[in-house]
Length: 431
Image 1 (cartoon, helix red, strand yellow):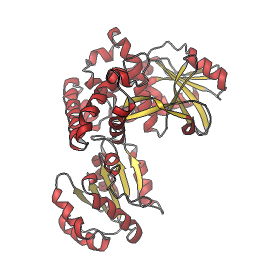
Image 2: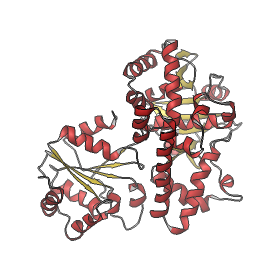
Image 3: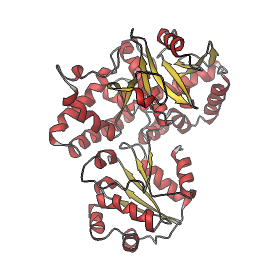
Image 4: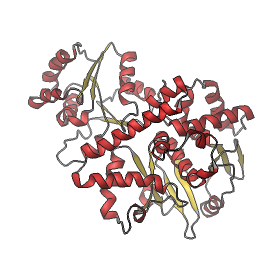
């Protein structure tokens, strides 16, 4: 399956300023597959080391972590001759070996010709520990997210449809009805399947939603296990409660995260560590309210007002135990959940494209779902789960801040009118 991360890895390989690369991200997003596929296609051989399946590897790094000491030993362990620039060295689940991560500093300083990529599922959690020695300034860092809708469509063999969507987005030109309808169906399938590569691959092969749900449940179980294995004992229960409650809060009309909905009388001091753990693990992300529309937006965020979205739509639906047909036909019983689910979907697509998102709220309660900086301009984005695009809040925002243009995402076709760029939900990956 095509992953956009390949373009980044190809540029990393030939960069004059290349450093050892840390590829981070939540479990099951495809880090190992992407790195090994890249290695097979662009190097003579790959020397692969997994600290989870072979914990004895840790002993190799206990005595000496200099490249001249490690390379001969690693060559012997892997059965691969490690050659400068021709071999890709891969350390997987590196969060389980602190010394291996620290060794990257010395590879960067004294042996930069060795190409090294390390992957980890809980690196954010690991490096937050006080004792963890992180090679600051000596590594490149890239986050891999679940597959976006474009990658999902390509996995379904819809190259021509993707090309048409991008063309219509650039030219604000309506899609032919049949293609628009087909893209909307793929969008709804993506909500059910999500972007976890194993789920996408199985769906492409079988179109079996029951099999996909089983795979998703397995991933959710691994997340719960991580919450127990890599967390402080007194935080395990709180982390699980917060994770479960995120799904509930996305069903509210006001999707702003509220501690009192987690627990009666709940406060930030009780649950903020749990939220931080979930964010660092890549399972969720926070979107803060911005008080002023000025650059840089991050300077004007309100750290006490935020929304929380999950990293994968398929896992969201699995966690809520939503039936595939209810999503495919947008059953009316889902009306309370549609808004939050669609917001979550758009946030994921924007995050994958590298945007830091914020939301805006006026003193009188008008709210714009997202504000991003795009091509140097601050752009508001309104999200609707259906074709009702009467966005009163967006109108208030535009009258107040007079942006160059605004983006409205809904089930409507492409268009541009009154300074508003109308974009179908399936084309969020184009932004």
